[in-house]
Length: 194
View 1 (cartoon, rainbow, N blue to C red):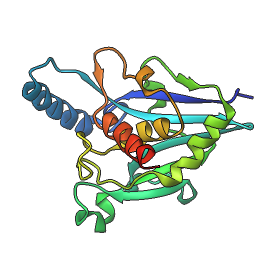
View 2: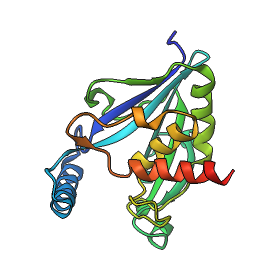
View 3: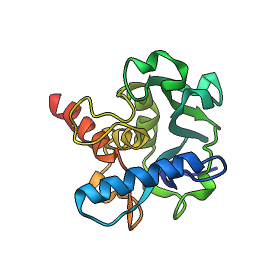
View 4: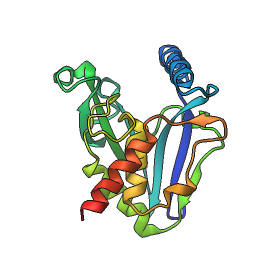
């Protein structure tokens, strides 16, 4: 049995088979972002979580609707690109949280799992919070958080809302996780409103 805890995985953008389009798009995006910011290019990462508690392991990620693993895994949805486009299945994402589930390309994660918490209560809070993830538009900054909303935003939001010290969590050296700061800012905005 795995001890209680929250494991964060940094998966290279476009890892695994079939990721050529994602890799190309990511590299193009990063080249433009780096040029605009006057900095060197970085490796881009997609984040995902596995949560362990009470003898269960939950896999948590955000992915396109059309790559659906099982209907029972879906705890939320949102639009991709624009709210208007989100009317069509091709332009929707899902927030997935499922016991015993798998995350594609987990084996490609850089450095393996990063244990962010060993507290049972924190682990269970992350699982519970998946049903409350904001349904921002993937690739947009509608809430004016200073970064686009995406899968990294969702993971950062879950960690921040469950009480993790976000100053201690960062992508691997030389890497970036676009959208991460949007998740942290969204969580802080909600906490400040309470």
